[in-house]
Length: 492
Image (cartoon, rainbow, N blue to C red; front, side, top):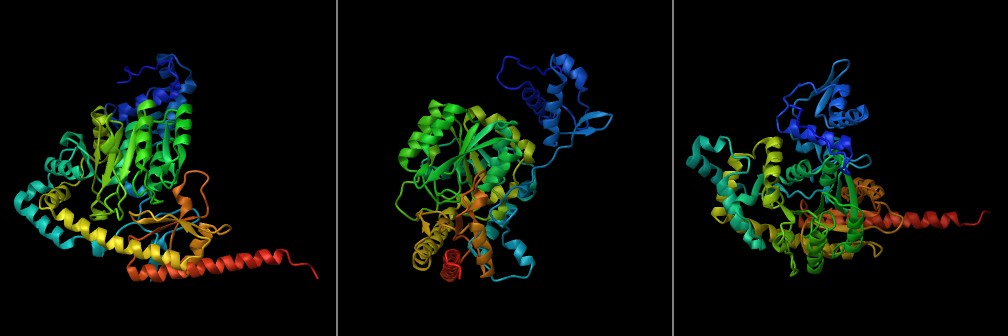
C-alpha cells in the first residue's frame, strides 16, 4: 500500500513534507486502515533512498496532527479517525483567551444583567420560530422517514437549486453542481484548510480578522501572513509586496462589513484584488455573512460576482440571518477544486443534517426569506443608528471609530494609554461586556481596539450600555491624567 509513495528530489518542497503529505493523503482517503503499522523508519528510508531523519520528521508531523500514534518498541500506527468538532474553534458566542473571557464564564459566578456588546450572535427573539415550526411539520408530512435518511455529501439537490436562484440577488451565477452545503461557515473554513493546506504552507489573512479562521489555519500548522486592512479595504501595496516574496495557498478575505472592523472594500480595491489574483495565480476565499445587512447606499457586490477566472471560493452562512444553532452554510466552488473539497467535506462529517436542509429549501420556495431578512434589516438598522448616535454623544472625543453603514460591528479605537484588556475588566464590573480587539490578531495585536456588536442588545441597552462605557472610559482617562501629573510633582 506504500509502494506508490514517490519523492521528487528536484522539487523545492522538503522531502519530509512530501512524504508527510502523501502518507496523510493515503490515510485520509481510507487507503490505509486504522491501526495499520507504518513501515519502519530504516526500511522506509532505504526504499525511498533518503536519510532516516526524513522519515522521522514526516512521522512526527503526522503524530502532531494525531493522524498516527506511536507505540514504544513497536512502531508507528494509523490513528482512529478524529471527527470534526466545531467547538474546538473560536465561535462568535464564546471565546476563551489567556487574558480575557466572555460572558458565559462570568454567568457561572452569578453575575447577571450584563449588557452584551461582545457577541455577534442574534438574540432568540429574532428567530423565525413560527414559520420554522410550520415548515418542519410540512417536511415531515411530505417526506416522512426520508427526511431522516442519508443525504448526498454535496447537499440536498432541491436546496442547492433554491440557493442557485437565491444568490442571483448578489449578482452571482452558480450552477447547482458548483454548490456544496456545509454545516456552518466555520466548517467551510476548516474544509478548505484541510483541502489546501499542508504543514508549513502559507496563508494570507486580513489584519485584524475572524479568530475562528486563525484557529483553523494554526491547527494546520500553516504560516499566517497578516495584511493590514483600512477603511476601504486591505493594503494592496503590502499585499503585492508579500505576493512577490511568497506564494500563499490562498488569501482569506471578508470584503463586505468585515469582522471585526465593519469595513467594506471599495469597488476599485475589489477589482484590483482580482487583477492581482490573476497576475500571481492567487486563490481567494471570500467569507460573506453580513452583506445582507446593508443600511446605506454603498455597493457591496461580492468578489465572486466579479470573478471571471474562477479565482474565488465563496462562503455564505445563514447563522446571522436565520438561526445560528442550525449550522447551515454553503460554498460556491470552481470546478477545478470541487472533487478535492467534496472529499474533505465527506471526511469531516459525511453530510449536513438532511431535515434542516429540506426545511430551508421550503423556506426559500415559499419566499419567507425576504420577510425575515427585511425584519432583521429593519431591527438592526434601528439599533445601528442609535449606536452611532450614542457613541458620538457619550464617548470622549479621544475615542475614534468609522461608521460602517452595515453589518453588526463597530471597531472602536481607544484613547492613547488605555488598553482594551484593561477596559474589558472595568467595563464588565460596570455591567458591560465588550470584545477586546487583541483576539482578532495572529501576531502583534493593537492593544487599543475594541469590537462592539449590536447583535444581542436592545435599543434601550445600547443607550444605557454606551453611556456606562463612556463613564468608565472618562474615569480611566481622568485617573491616567492624574497619575501622569503626580509623576511630575516636585519633591518637598
